Amino acid sequence: MQDLGCVSHISRRDFDERQTFAFRAPAPALEYVSLLIENKLLLTTNRTGRVYAGFQKLSRMEPIVERYLRIADVSERVYIFGETDWKPPRHPNMKLVGLCGASGLAREWFVIADSSTLRVAFVAVEETMRDAPAPEARTFRAIKSSDPAVVAGLAAFAEGLIDTQLAA
Image: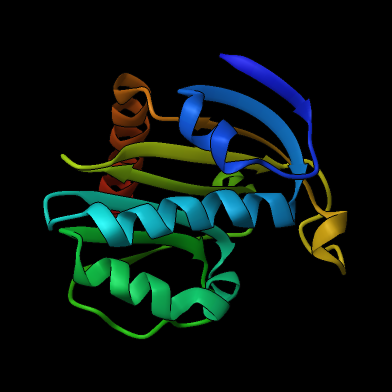
């Protein structure tokens, strides 16, 4: 895994050409990485895969909820993780996994796509205060990987969290 260090943005070339890399970046750079994955999901999925997305708080999904509803249209299942401070619209292929604020997962932002046509994962942990006033003030340590073994491991971890939530 290559460490890109602290970056202000991630290029499409870095995203496409590097199988696995780590980096530190502000929230706007992570929005772009998420968008790259979300766009690929919309263009390449064929109802064979699952998507796991963590927004820390569900209200952070609100500006892009329509995109996730479209992703749910073309995916087997989409699981959305976050503190339940907002209620997204219902969709038969989208399930919510509520988190409590004390959960370590409530500090993470992630998108994991595990399908026959797209295997990619992006996971970030916030290093700063989650409620910083400006997105540029929020800094994360992140990894992106398209290594099938890494993606499968992260998807299995997410499935385990879902199973734990359903059993509770």
